[in-house]
Image (cartoon, rainbow, N blue to C red; front, top):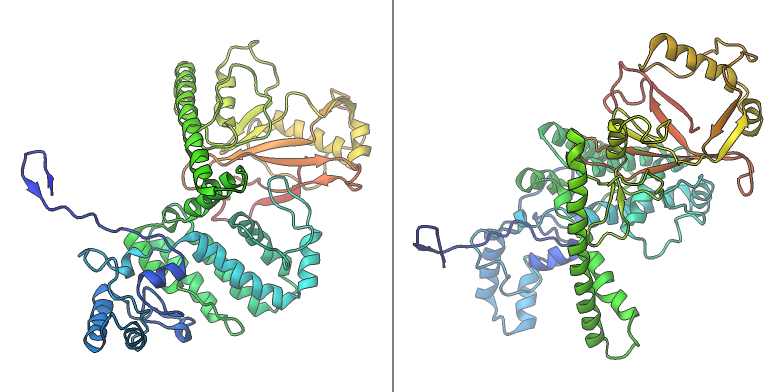
Length: 507
């Protein structure tokens, strides 16, 4: 009983909006037996059907349990279990949700991205491709991929990986289709690619009716090409769940799964391997006190940073939501903050670039090493990798025979067209011996790029580092990261795909 603001008391019931669980846990809580869907009436032989089966509603399960109770006494466990199996139930006499009028398993068991998407990918999609391509071949193809800063490099392949984490699942998903494209049968590639497209669309932060149509189309494409592979899953129930409960990203077991490491494994490693329980509790108590102190100090730092930003105008409202391993920004810029629980402080190069532009001439070094173009922020280290080198030496060192005419064309376009977007590439108009107004240049081997989220321009992605190093040990041919740049103002990514884009090595 709870009283409302005017005084009368009311019976109040907390609705069960979502129960985050993996498939085995969901089957147990829904009171169904193994190899049976917890949200529909389908069994394992029907998991590959291209349509959604009848819902396993609250009323259906409770009605089946009433029949079981009428035939057997629940105290007689063996007989009760045998009668339950006739309805593909697991023998639970009274589910925990039976007394809650608003709890229905086909509603509150929402899709959970860690298991439904990433774990399923590794258990099924990746294993299909490993079998289709061959262990040795797929391991070789992954091993020769160029390492990329911020992503795991599988130098021994993926077929023998043990205890694969969700982060590792995501890294493999980004590469596996391109790695296996010409080695697996076309039907397998099309089916797995359709499933991956289905998984990526499910992770959209906002989903409308048009997005649901695209999600359904991706799943239909998989079913149309599943001749050689069958997916054991609950994917037909995902779209109705999105309509009723929202996007899948909000129902994630990442936090609870990770809690096993932070709350159990890490404290246990700090013990003397005796009397685990009291030592883990003491460790958690000390950690909680440190977190409280960290929270208090971070709130104070946040307040001071906000006060410093108040004089910057419209740029004071932007959040600092990114992470970078480079910290060479001008002193006095409140661009870094650390929230409780975050292992590293985060840097927002959009805020830094806007603040630098607002400062008086002479108060900051020029040229600015942090600037913004559209929805991308660029950041160069204050100290270049090569402080002074002639243009001809750069041509030889990096193997760029057309560098001089390219720079001449660029400067000519800047003078002619001003600050506008124009295509990169094509024939060079300038000659190879064109005279420039300078002979020496500065060279950076790394540049940090930071972008906003596609669906929310106020959300900032972590900064990524692009490498462009000349040949040296162990990179005898240099270390270059590839990027795709949109160079045509008539095209808008991602609707235009790769139209109007240009693929090149970063420099």
